[in-house]
Image 1: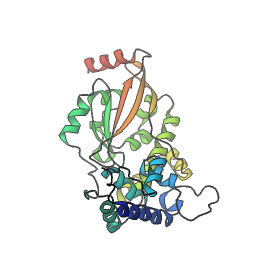
Image 2: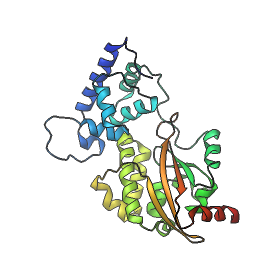
Image 3: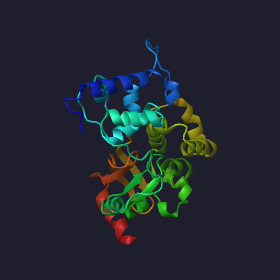
Image 4: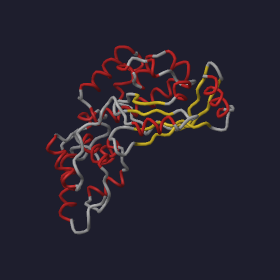
Length: 280
């Protein structure tokens, strides 16, 4: 929903509000490296765009007061990226002419419609991630290809925790370190949105304690784009699987995303997935 042409004052106020909130933050406040010498105080526009998961051009237009659309999820991500408190967040939604949603999505549940959708994506592996990368839902294909997520303790049913601490993950992914650093760099953006929240802090501290790689790489502040593309998996029953991974945001639930893996025309991956499902 765009602000109407009859609301230029509201758009100008929103633009000015975003600029002032950006100017008061330093990179260290949001878990980003300081980088090169800065002429002006505050975050750069591209840093806010990165933390909020939006395009730099779109965010620039928003700060320029142009008549652009901003969904509730995007506003929620901007609120987290700019470290807005409760009243500032409410004001942001008011200026954008959007109803104020609940402050945070549930970390532990998805609705029945999402669960059914994931199940019907078979034979393609798929799962739903929460804001902290907790695995909220998955289909049978995902359990057969990766691991039986249902057998993991609920408090440890988290993609990063599984990938960095479970030996099965190291066995499944042929280039474990490459994927680990990529996923960690993407999680860093989620951390930037929610840094300081107790459940995020607890996860990071636990991973530092249990994974030497995580402990070594976390202070580097590496940032990556969305973790999608080609994935090669060594499966103990059917051999090598070559899949393409893509991530999709769940629009009505801020911070929640769908991960989908589809077979590439190599290594007879599609036929192998079908055999796995039929033999389970």
